Figure 1: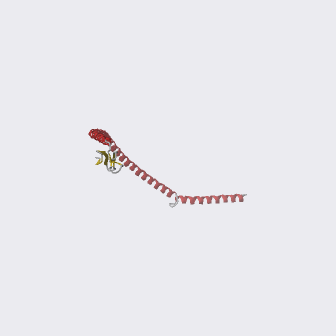
Figure 2: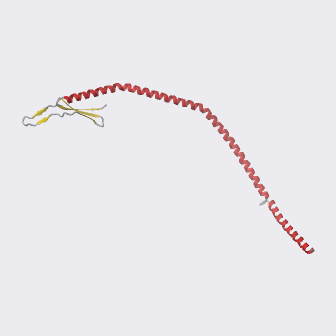
Figure 3: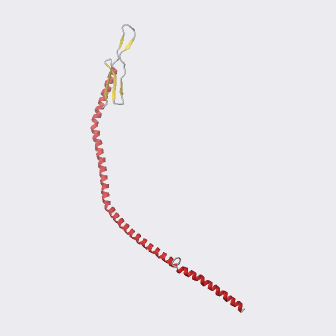
Length: 185
């Protein structure tokens, strides 16, 4: 039994030696600068430094942007009264333009009314002349050699206005057809 006990003691010692050897290699790996904990700590330290630099840069940028924004807000607040003044001036100008347009329209109507009335009177006079000319009876002539009766003049009156503004009146006056042309002014 002592032999078994010695063998078990030897086996436990061998296992403890093997475990110590594994722990030694792991500790050496952790303490080495290439793959160990020092490399991890160094990388973590470098990341922390980079983060602090980025944070400082972001803080500086935010401060600069805040200063710019405050300046822009001050400029905007200074320009609000000027914009309100311009808006009121535009309102006044538009009201004045409406009043001037209404005044000009009234003046134009007052100026053109007598001319329109005189044109209307002239048109009525022309119409009366046409009606008077059409009321004159047409004369028929008879040929001495034949029994045929020939009409000397047409008994119709007409008025035509071309696209270029020329008026042509045809009417019967003194038993003779008359034609008058003129331009519309």
